[in-house]
Length: 493
Ligand SMILES: Nc1ncnc2c1ncn2[C@@H]1O[C@H](COP(=O)(O)OP(=O)(O)OP(=O)(O)O)[C@@H](O)[C@H]1O
Image (tube, rainbow, N blue to C red; front, side, top):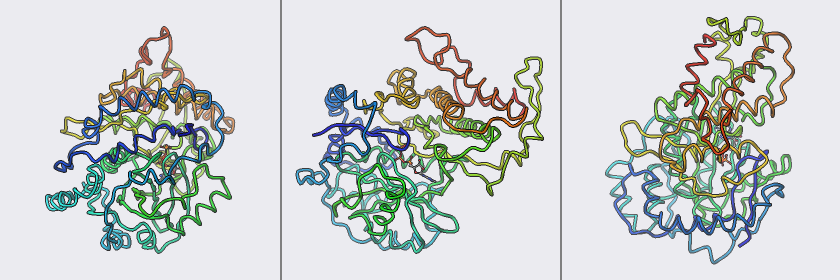
């Protein structure tokens, strides 16, 4: 089995081809037990932990010999991933898939689509039906279907056909293709094939889905309209759009026409929430400040409500939407700054509500996130059991995974809001040193830039600490909440 790593976007996340074995474990026909929709994925993981240990060793071993490949990665490395191999077909759950009319109709009806504010209707009725079906399919798949209130996967082609509006591809990532359905209120379809080698684990989808549903209610977190499990070959309309994208932007993924009729996918139907920070142009330092400040506040809201840590907040996962594409620069005239003059404690108001409302930020992609349901003792979290996560080089993003490992000491289930501070430091780094923002045009913009630089120094993870000591040990801020409070007081916002 060839092994290798790949990056997406401008060195976004990478996946290891060594994780193939996880997919097969994912579909291990475990002893079927009662389907409890309150069970978190991590409770499932307990069942497979004995296997995981073995996998980690194998995977780490393979990785060590691959370390050199991290530095300069060929595009679309390792296309021969075995997905066509007949020997892998046994991993596909054998289930009869009737076309599921109800869900298709729901897509035409926006009110039916909008399930974002409600928990999945996993009634005892549904559970009974699921238990009846459970002998036919692996437990995790049955659980996932229960989460999205389906008995069976629906036909991929039928589901896509039910959209009467134009669809085109807008993005891609390690495990997904992302399409946009043009409507008055556009919908984003994040399509994740799962259940086979080199595909996202069913357990990871369960976590992402649960967290996305929960956070959907909070401002600044992507709104999930619905999720659906589909099955079949890739619809030709999507392949055509995939080809157009490939021509224009050169895709790093494999052409999705390769999928077998037994392929399963989870589709997240999300609100379209703008352009990711990596691909958005920032026109001035006022915008730069708004993005940092709003991201910090969104994280603080998540912390306060759900002990939330994003744990993967790279610039592809922060979406920016300008309201009416308004040029914010004229507002700079109304801002006065002396904030780093220590004699000045009560400072000016840099943002009126109208200016703060001119740009929205939205966080997406909660595959690696951690949160705890209010009133529930078991957190939802990712085990971070892909050793490759910690081996990336040449981008500060990859250092953050290693720093997080130091902060958490491997206790990924516990609450360490310092990880949010690490990602905020990364965000400042990207804004200050990776985006090309025009030079400050006046004193006010200059002050904002200085403010961001000052914060970058304050949040430095390894400041004044000895090598090997815990990151952020000497940093005054232990969470986005505490930073937000300090920033609000300091800048009187
Ligand atoms: N709701 C949305 N609105 C607008 N664009 C989106 C939305 N969701 C995803 N995208 C686009 O698709 C890209 C990939 O989405 P996402 O990060 O969720 O995929 P992923 O497979 O989880 O990626 P990663 O490699 O970070 O794990 C984003 O960087 C963004 O450009």
